[in-house]
Image (tube, rainbow, N blue to C red; front, side, top):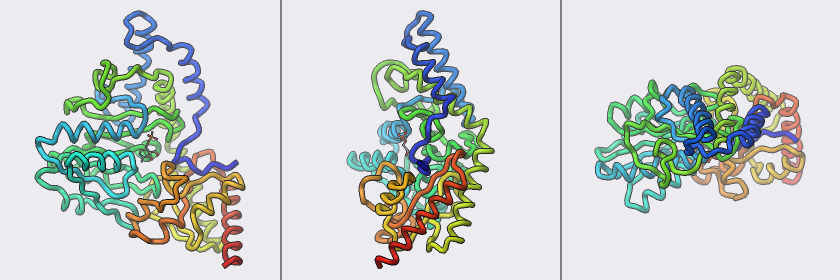
Length: 380
Ligand SMILES: Cc1ncc(COP(=O)(O)O)c(C=O)c1O
């Protein structure tokens, strides 16, 4: 089995799994209870919150722990737009966002909000000038991803943050794919809201956080009890919160090494692909994006067929985001980059690395792609 789908999700680090297992036994108290067991559980959560906050140079009071990255995005967008609609009903995002941003935006359109979907260039990036041109008097919120989950491109976040701070417009960034490799400083980069998910950094699925400045006094998304400093109701998932914090600490300790290893793997793949004679082009620009995502176009080779062939040989990778896998729809990200109807949208593969992948595994993938492309030519 060869796993090249780390952008979809990552394996849980054994040390994270151990923390979760201990916590399941140890932390059964309800963190809202005032007796010792509850207080101890609460302390563990607050310790984790400090780790999350420090990782993006934020204050603990500004971290809302959520059930996943999607909930963080929904919380960043929907209640914010509803609260600010007196000021304006215009929102800006990009055509290449994850569905966990696009669909909340689509939902707000049904409520009478207007959304501008900025184009992206052939590298998958939004330009600051197109953002500037889209801003209106009634623009209240801009949501632009830090790194794209299909092609790995990095948006010019600091410049976007500067511009929006000058114009006094709230800036949300979905950092789910960037958090593992990029250094994030919400103060320096003028980010008001930022989404993160644990399962992309060797933490468990089903836990994430939203950074949201408490000074903004934005309303809740999930209403009920007074958990999360009154910002998100629901009894806390203490074992996963602690596991997530462990994953963050490990990620920070290993980030530089891990980035370097992934970059070496990506470069090896590109070099060996060139050498193999397989016709291919990059989608986006690998060297300018995050180190774990490499997306390639293999002209004439249908993504769904390649995925089946790879699966039969135990190689796991993706054509687009996992959430659209299983549907034959072409990638909306590649369409945003290259235009609707472009064959790239249905003839591409996303290979996403973990630091534990090896160059031998990449060589196996290339040998298989060579086989598939030979058969393809033979069969016309
Ligand atoms: C860019 C991006 N945003 C949001 C999400 C959703 O995160 P979660 O699976 O934790 O809901 C993902 C997951 O694929 C993602 O890649």
